[in-house]
Image (cartoon, rainbow, N blue to C red; front, side):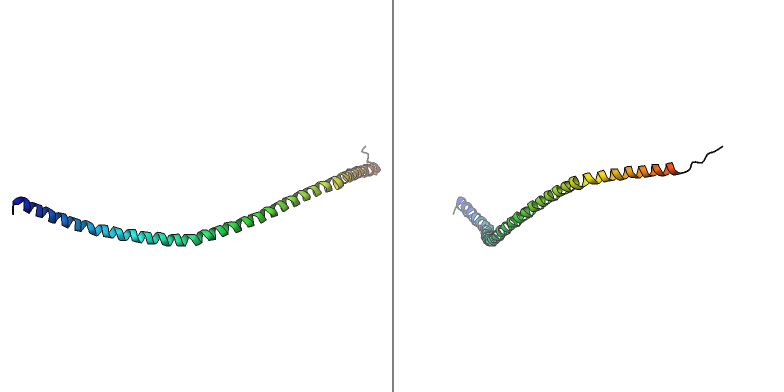
Length: 125
């Protein structure tokens, strides 16, 4: 055996040890990939019911929002009716009330004026 053969054997041994040392992390990495695949499969199976529930929830929420919109439009219509009723009441009753108030103020002023005219005036000498 020559020196080149011995160097070749040493290099082959070192290469075999290196391959053996690199095989351990590669095997562990393979197990990590297997676990990752299993986890992804579990997550996918768990997400499907969640998405179904979210779809149902959103559908029910849309129904409730439609009901709230209907209620809001009814309240808006009722508010408009009340506003029109108040305006009608003010126009019907407000005008005559103002006239009565003005008339009563005039009568009161006239009565006060008559009372002052009837009082005897004291004369100072």
